[in-house]
Length: 234
Image (cartoon, rainbow, N blue to C red; front, side, top):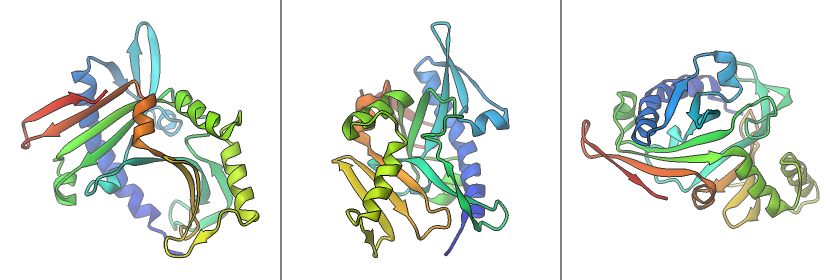
């Protein structure tokens, strides 16, 4: 089973640092007062930055689909669970952990979800993008939206129901994609990729739903490397 976890994390970390300046620009355009978190432990628990609004603090976790910079994307994936993998070898362990969408240790209030486009990976790694579409999605509002669809009170029930459907044969493996997929609504599905060492289980949500529950949805577009425009999409 192929695993590129170590190299993926290294590349992702580099691109995450690059993306911070573009997220920062969107915050400033929208007059959002914020401070970035530099504490590694807090970052692991879903705190990339803190927004100050009306005397309150809002904990934000930035999520950006950097791997798909070269194609249009109309969904976003939220992690339910995965196998622990050795940080050096990438070999999976026989133990799973709660994904960031359901982990109760995460203190996230809001997701800043980004869809970035770039001409090439070289341009991207050099800090040049074509556009960044950004949505501010309250975590609990999104969870409640999903729970109303499945008529449950705990978001963890998603994974339990999914596994039950696999066991009963209601959800079967697609041999071409190496995935089990449970379509719970037109724009929401649960997916498990068992060809990956992590064997992640994710809930994939359509951008139309994310926009519906978002408090901000905007597009930053670069016309050249130094000239840009911003447009509110909601």
